[in-house]
Length: 481
Image (cartoon, rainbow, N blue to C red; front, side):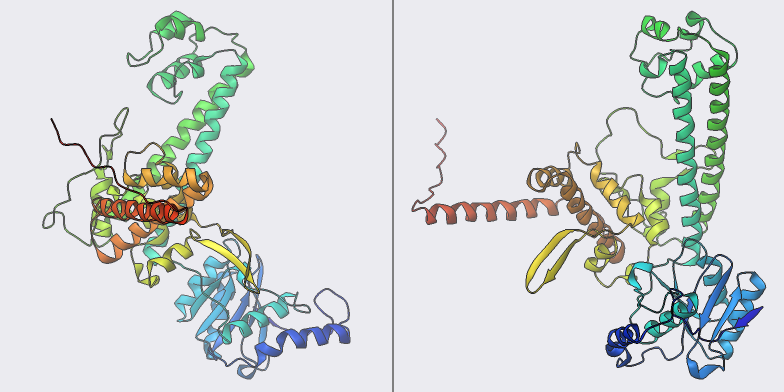
């Protein structure tokens, strides 16, 4: 079902448009109207939760603006109308998740969607209604002033949806961990301050015993794992409390909720693994073996990469997907598959590494006017892939690698925030270069860069000494006796 609209007699704010506002609109649109039309078959769509407004070029239909409901039948009706109008591309704002069904319908009808960030589309006075908004989108898209947002292939988008859902499940599970901590604290049971993780082997065993009715601290202490650093006496003292029924009820429900979300996360992992295995691998490990692991052994207990149920090896599967071993990049060991779900493996979407880091919002943003830099800082853009690279950089503070040395050096020079961005910038360039050029990570290149940096530092010292009237003379090593 669609409705045909005629132009309202009032402006977008509900008031009659004055001649002054009309002159302002003409001044703002004067330069735009002179631009050549680059997309003559473009349409503009304003998306809402219940209805959408669609605008086509004025010469394609007697009523170039129509309203459609968001039911699937009406969306297909809209697609047929756009095809009859000769539309080949349509621009729409990325509003929540409302654009996803419309995006799929447009692709089914052979229309190229142009998903636009709302910040990149500025409105003008007098165009504040949905009726005007879709026309403004259509005009901007026709003159080439809108840039489409990045969207991976359909298979990658499916993995991304499950990855993001898994992240939400992890956050909800962590809330119930906090609820268990709160219930134990209210009963003055201090076990969560004695062991490092209450969701570990010892913590969950003790919580399950408490929920099951055990109140004897001595019996609960017997559930202590031998690897726990705290002594048995300390654990026993921490398990003495006031067992109030309301807090025990809260602890029981929180424990069941945490267990439920853990089961949901496991099921989600199994589904993700099935989808990843279905991708066409870039390399066959049988013909091209996985490169040797150059990383040093991680401190503390080892974390398993293998899921015993599904037989899924993280390093091997990521190697098959990308064709290179990205787990060798410091900081990216456990984030490779998440990055795959966000950016895919087709780096041709970005012509150079500079375009890639700019899209990630990992490059500085300068506001220059009149030849003067008015503002310099990090771009205020929320990019999930960029945040992953920041997390990778943030984890390198104690890492004994060249990237870890670079992070610490930049912290002393730029501060923590800027140093994290600078290190994430380097990690993103390494990621882009490895995937696009199909080359393995080579840590020996850092030695060449360090030698060049020392040479620049030496030349700087000599230049400063010469300005002060001194001359630097290197110390000759004394011959061995």
